[in-house]
Length: 87
Image (cartoon, rainbow, N blue to C red; front, top):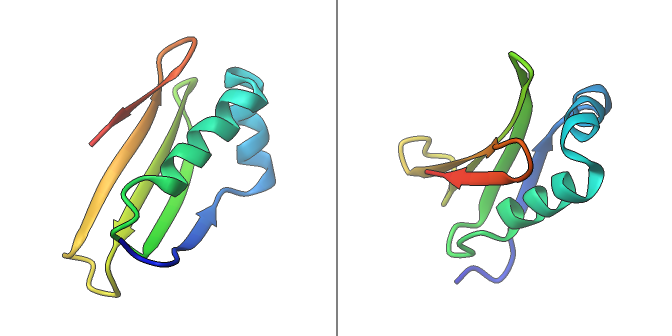
């Protein structure tokens, strides 16, 4: 397990607000928290997202370093009343 994680949050205020208007702020915050803390064996995480055809999604990419081939990705997909997490 890594002792610390660098999280690169790539959500601008407009996008974050659009997502929260659909999901509610608490569920968005919970999803971001889950993605930020998932699998602490990888020290770098990038979280991005958007609203696509009316559907909010978040995407988290975890890496051990700068090598992009050494990564793992999880998507948080909105299911109408909750986020589901899929890798």
